[in-house]
Image 1 (cartoon, rainbow, N blue to C red):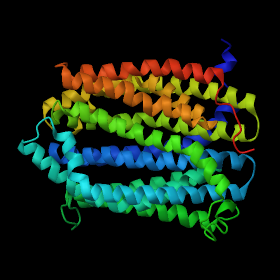
Image 2 (cartoon, one colour):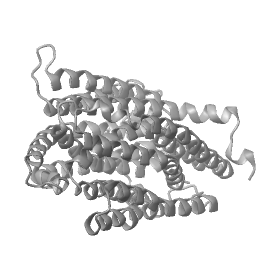
Image 3 (cartoon, rainbow, N blue to C red):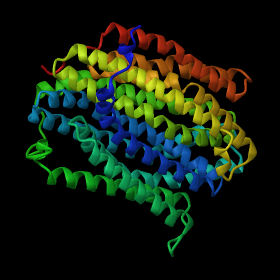
Image 4 (cartoon, rainbow, N blue to C red):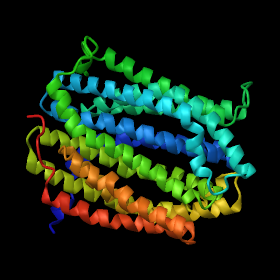
Length: 460
């Protein structure tokens, strides 16, 4: 293997970091404040923390539905931008708007009608205990308030994704930073009742999140429409909401597998958590603590994955096929190397981080071991994420559907469900076996990326 195949020059990394760092900063600050938010709730008690964690796991499915919906159209946005086709960008935005609206309305109806039943799925380990009843109560309170922030989240994602695909990554980052700081401020005021505000606990955390969503979307929308020379697609954006039928068909054909993929992947992750939860509520608490720090450390490969989609997508749209392939190889190698270093830091923090929570010793021990296992497999996850976005950048959404969501249900969920229901294995062993299952996906991803099956221009 040639060194130059996987390692770029100084200019290459400058270009990559120019795209990736704003996304990393936004995701990093968002996840850091999410971590503080989680700790604030965790300081109240285990039931409050678990209730909010369960609801956030369910809302995560909605978030990924929106992400999948805008990303399907985003493949076309990035390539239209590469061709300097402003009307094409406008139409992809309108598609994002309609799809996101439908998903949001459906989610709100589902959660209002069946929210309690969804939360109870995670309480099967101790269904009749006082702890489970209290957790359900707090979860329901948190969920109903969180629903009010979904419309703002939907609109922010439609605008932010389009701006990023058109090369504007700084503004969404700034809006995200302001949003999370607002969230942090109101968390402090409303969870604990500081400076004359009422003590609202988990309800306060949900209100703070909803407020921050609206602050974020206002900043993004106002900026975009006041800078038409930088964002020409916003000019006459709402003069019509009609989308040409030929483009709708193309986006639906390419984007539907992506939407279904994100939805099934997120629901698969939710199902994995449910499988682990049958071992008791302390497992739910431990997983929540582990996932919080994991989200913070995962921003590196998640942001680099988004960069792969943007950079490689633009190169494909411009017809630079060999450059796209070379760039993808270097980005994947960079992501794995960076995450290998971060994994070491995560391992060192594993016994210390759970001590920040006001929970019992068993939950803390679960959290420590979940963090250790996650850190060990972080380089593997970095490779998988970069490979996924590489395949997606060329519009190979059916392959990514099989690679991602079909795999999680057929392999990961099957392992977790079988071992949690039909064996007495400790939950830590089950969690490790699920991570090992992803080794199969690594081999498949390596072969697909190397063969270059994803190299195509889909908008010419």
